[in-house]
Length: 174
Image (cartoon, rainbow, N blue to C red; front, side, top):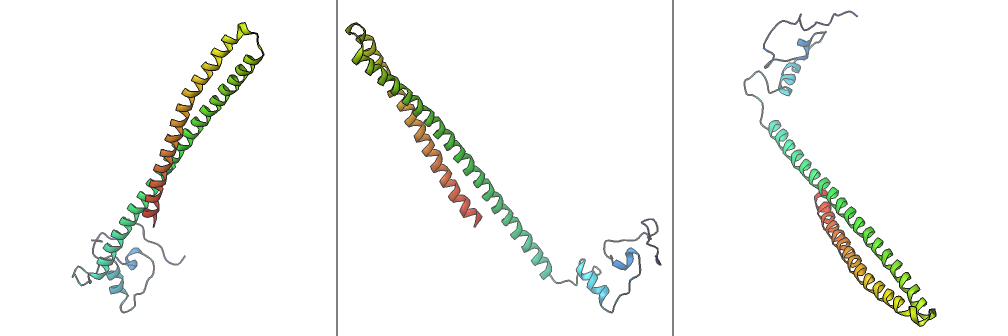
């Protein structure tokens, strides 16, 4: 209420690059004996005389490098975790497809069993047709079994890939 804040138009033009101080920004501010030098040291090491020690810059640069390396590790950890998830998803899809094939195999087995039962009760004139059906179901079951076993092997392969990548994830995440 007592002091009017200066607007950007009221602040005199000057070179702000080497001499920025909170008192220059308007308002009421009283400097102590060493406040001015401390403030300038915090903002770049003094009045261009190169009087700042290189330790602060070294710490800042080291911190930036460590943060960058940490970010790269975090990115790689996230990437490997996502990749392991995708591989595990592929394994689940293959397991589902294999399960579908085994269900189909079971349906063919049921039909084969019905045809074998029919062989035992039908007249001799119809036994040849049911015998051919039994043979056809056996052949179809063999083909289905090959497909189901291949899908199970694919699922196992995807699971192993997921486990390997997840192991890499754990290494990156440490």
